[in-house]
Amino acid sequence: MIDHVLNIGILAHVDAGKTSLTERLLFETGVIDRLGSVDDGSTQTDTGEIERRRGITIRTAVASFVLGGLRVNLVDTPGHADFVAEVERALGVLDGAVLVLSAVEGVQPHTRVLMRTLRKLRLPTLIFVNKIDRAGAREQDLLADIRRRLWPSCVPLNAVDGIGGPRAVTRPVADPYEAAEVLAERDDELLELLVEGKAPDDATVRAVLARQCGAGVAYPVLFGSAITGQGLPELLDAVAGFFPAVPRVAQEGPPVGTVFAIERAPSGEKVAYVRVRSGVLRVREPLTFHRGQRQSGDGDVDGGTGPHAYEGRLTALAVAGDPRETRALAGDIVKVWGVPEIRVGDQLGEPEQAGVARHFTPPGLETVVRPRVPGQEPRLHAALLALAEQDPLIGTRTLAGGDTSVLLYGEVQKEVIGETLARDFGVEAVFEPSRPVYFERPAGTGEAVEEMQRQGRNAFMATVGLRVEPAPRGSGVGYRLEVDLGSLPLAFHRAIEESVRLALREGPHGWPVTDVLVTLTRTGYSSPVTVAGDFRGRTPIVLARALRRAGTVVYEPCHRFEAEVPLEAFGPVTAQLAGLGGEVRDARRHGEGWVLEGEIPAAVVHEVERRLPGLSHGEGVWWSEPAGDRPLR
Image (cartoon, rainbow, N blue to C red; front, top):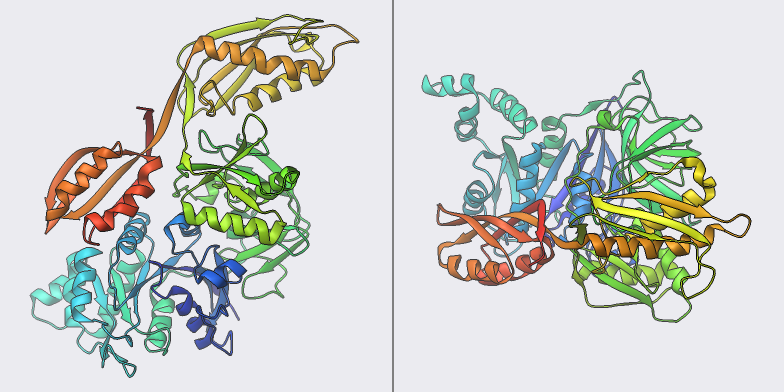
């Protein structure tokens, strides 16, 4: 009987072997009877054709196995930097993580970025050092690197005999004294034992390690091989023993949960992955979902940008690890059907109860996409909308002239989107070179009025007056009336507001306008001649004139960054940062290198990450997060 559930993630620098590790875990626990291979595309979690062919994980996948009365839901997340949003979104629904390193390549730059995020979240984490059977694999000096470059409180649970060869085998660490010394810094009772010269027993050290691992301040380290299976029994024991599992009991109250992934069924129906946090989730019961505010400047083909709630009823659900289960309880990950409006990031139940923050960063690049075959624009538009529903950070917007732009993290993501459009939707797409994402804010206040006009180029039987003024930062687009609601039929009011929001997707400089308040100051119509189309045609003209009078300033989103570089790389790295528009605001010596802190345009973050290894001889580490914006220079 399953009485506890645990959701864990597999995280790694690309090519460290995390998908192979997932296969081995499923094999060792009897879920599959044959090991798949990344090289031949036969793994369980990389199910997409693109994933199999490229040998990389793109979408978050969920697999389950059982350890006694514990069900473990294993979330295999992407390792490529272009899909970091998938990784960070998954972290919000996890109870623990396994960070995979290669015993050959060791601590790589992206490994340190992932570890920093895990430490920031205080997410309980095990470190698994893979590939001990490969030539060049290391043990003691790699453990020293892990403690120096990831976190000092890392405790090995096993050791390796014959490392670097096909017969490498693991064995338990015999002496708990070394582990006790590492852990005593944060445990007074253990420290007292050591001061008194007493040797703590294995059970005491393991209990302290479990507490500190659960608090996210110490990290068990295991060596092994996903190919040979060495170290896997110890890893499974550690998963069951060190991570805080959730009791699987029916709780009173409405269900609360988080939507963290979307996929499409073969029929085209939308399927959502939900992490249930409390309550009981059943089919055919009324549910309330909440959607938060999107990032300022994000485009969206369906126009839905504001926070709102919507109702839904599930037509079916499937609990991960037990498809026969008819209800989902706290801790479960469940696939649900029957809610067409559902999107990634939506909260089931009250948002404050779900307890999930957005840790992922918005994309900094944009590309215009067109169909290779003329006439397929509507199909392309619908396909991009479907992709945006699966990943809300693939924002899209319609440009003047009808073209569609897509927000991106990097060029690999662009290639994957192109291949997905061709394979899943039958549309071959052509992408323009990527460009940075900017947005506009009004610099002042501007007003304009256009009266009804029967003749001429702008002949519309509608009177519209609008005032544009700045709104508080982060407020997005606001709209209000300074006329009586009864001055127009409701259909005409809707036409004006919809036209305002649509027109603000492209301001005077060609970028979305945000943090703006638009006020309807004057209206007029002639019944029965005037139709809603007159207001839809008149409103963008009036709004454009008001924006020109107010003036707009183009802004670029910025990141706050921290970079660790070797001593000799200080000059080249700071020069490169300055050349890309960055500002180094603090530089300090740290160990054998420098730590640089400052601000840089979000659009060039990926370029810095691309160049940093060459400038720092592969030793540089980059970390950044959104930190406001600044006027475009």
